[in-house]
Length: 149
Length: 101
Image (cartoon, rainbow over all chains, first blue to last red; front, side):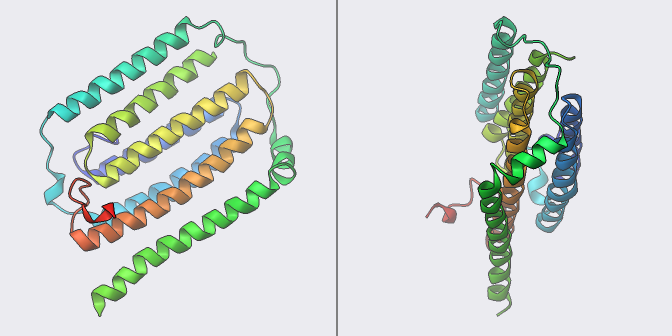
């Protein structure tokens, strides 16, 4: 749905809907913290960012539907083969049919793990986020200066 | 709906959809959609294995980091798409020869 929608704005909305579905899977897996994080980051930030970019870049002429070529046939065959083989191997394996564990990790353990074991990773991640956002701003800004001068 | 195989099946189907999008699409925005779908599939796998086989908080923590990294990556790629659109008036990746160094 997100990939095949004719109008790419509808594709972006469908992508947000699929993020919502993934968050519901996280709820099913007893990970409500990750689910809420997924909702905040993906549905809240990434989907809105993608929507803005789509509306900025949108243009009538590349919304035409591509013809069904050999490449798309290869894509369909590869994806179908991958999905079928993976699902069959999951079904055939005894190891994956484990019972659900009784205890689910809670918020306190996540917070403790983040603030102790993963604190260097947290700081590096903060640096990466800051540099990524700065780089994105610089990419978009230098180009505007060149185009106006 | 509550065994590990079900979640792995959903994740595999999502991953296959992402692979299909990566192979067939030419529009850069749709390639970003496909990559995001594949990242989500990997996260579902991570949480499912963590829930069923190794019930500690480690998997959820790693998935939190993964989501944050995916968000920053999406921001950078979208900025690159905007720049490419300003330069080329198009976001078809088969037309963007000048990005190839």
